[in-house]
Length: 308
Image (cartoon, rainbow, N blue to C red; front, top):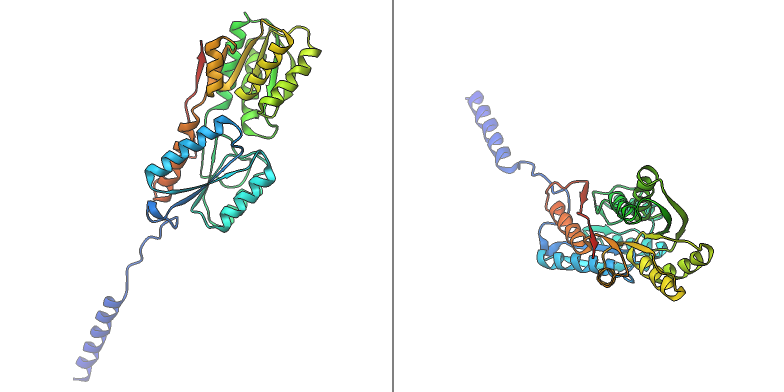
């Protein structure tokens, strides 16, 4: 009888344990459960450039369509302001960060802080040289630089004197566009001499002032490639003011002012990125990731060449 009682007690306790225990449930990789709970921080290098305004607008439309909140920070081309903006968004506990770095090195400590806080980081247009980044959404800037070089080389008949206006030193966009351009010229257009290479910081006024000085120093210039349209438009203004004609100008970005200049015959070509699609893709990639879907570490956005 005692033996039977012990069996009954053991069975009862086992049944009770089975009723009160729970099967472990997989924990989401991110805290966001639904679109309405998602807040994304978008930190942009500068909104004083139409390219990045268009990128922001594409991101905002994608956020609105997905029903997520997008908080935007304008770093005004200042790395210190960018870092402060990122740190503020970390404090506000956004679910993810999309960063368009002002400087690929300077942004690294801020990305590492986001990593430590468990906030996933994505970069757009310009990459970072450190920290953990889930995905980088950008055009192939090396390929774009080659595209510009090939067009300029062919237009000049493979010979002449060329100027390169470079973007902000330390940005991946400037490095990669310059690499593509110079590699092509060195290997496939040896009759062209690059007589000047100076930074104009992706800025139209700087492009004008820098090219004014180059025009004074270089009596013969056949072509100019600038790492973005803002600089090339400034260079065109400088050439017009100096009465220098016959120069082939090639830009990068295909902003509205640049495509208008192409139509008017002032700008020979510009490499077309798709900033709106870039911003849209960045937000859509973040939302997919936060909802548990797999995303690629590098997501290219197609390029094309705009000519008259």
